Length: 271
Length: 266
Image 1: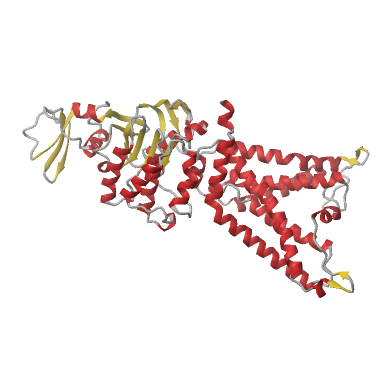
Image 2: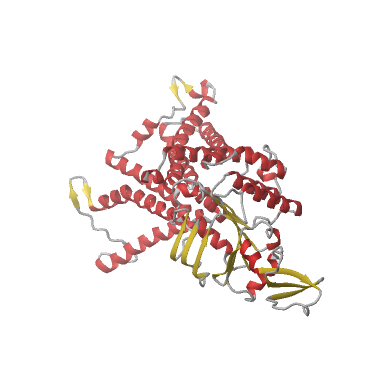
């Protein structure tokens, strides 16, 4: 569980990225969305304990991240957008790291390896960027840490791998875990999220569970806007218009890209 | 339980295991490379020398000491770039365990290994020559290397010798912590900072000499006027100052290095 109150942060000699950021997050798969430069990766780094907020309070599962308590680090795994892996085989890497994570599940790792078609004896340096990303995601999920921070996890994955990633993530994250996925490619994760958080201009512009969103909003594609009342947001599409309206009688699938654009254009109120 | 979050022997062992497993090939290459290099240098030096004495080992041990400092300067290899630095910081171990594991591997084990390699390389080089070259007219032409002889060849009292060892250790501590202070391009930045420190120190000495002893200082004769006085028997103020710097500065480098690491943001 993540609780932050009035966090502020800025990089050296740069203006404030977060001024008064407060957020509470429960377990589940959480999508952290925002435009480029909104501070998604920075927020993940603050959660990981790599950066220290200037002011405010941040507590994750009872720990203050920047104190870098080893028990916290053993229960948290971060997959960064950019990564460098040592020149060893997969097997070697796993051998060297698995004991540092008390809840590590080697069987789960091999199951995910099978799905991602990774071999134990392959050298990490000889793998393609996408395969290395798959390896890191597999390792993160097998670590069974209660907090998983995934920064742009679908970058560099091909289309089948993206859908495989969604499938594996949903089946791997248990009820006592939080997986926070930071991405600007909203389509890659739209079907798997339990909660959506949008960061904009240093604040949380939107935070709600997908269940609530479905209950409150309806997403439709219509040939013309004339027949509809109470349109909250609309965008032109090849089929006509994609619209957000108040909840429909039957629940509709969330159009995350449309919702994100609506939030960014301030057409939908917070929560 | 509070102590457990600062240091746990089990976690420390796992961290060491992790480091050795990940860098095993690199370490083996380092050791082999340095051993071969030392062997070649020693063999060449013995070959061109008519009579290779204990004193002839001194410049080579000094050279080996410089190589040792450079190797110690490679501590915290992950701090070369931000991504690997983040990976290292996020490894599930305390800051003290990470700091100590680097110190143990890059300083303690490296020193022991270097001493062994040096001894082994000199022995091997010596044995590469025929008995005729080694012993002529019943005289040992290539003398055997020994650390105790090297120690005895330093022409100073015990107090100076210990101060010398502490000064070496302070230098090692400085090189050990450089990546924590400077991160990228640590070697170049260390060189520049070291140069600035030395010249800054000399500059201040000159400035103070001109201010406080204007009659005894000039740009043509003495630019630094040092006033020496005896503090007690066999100890003057300059010696005391040198001893203090030698004995204490390693604490400064290690402690500031540790806190720099602890507060590091990536």
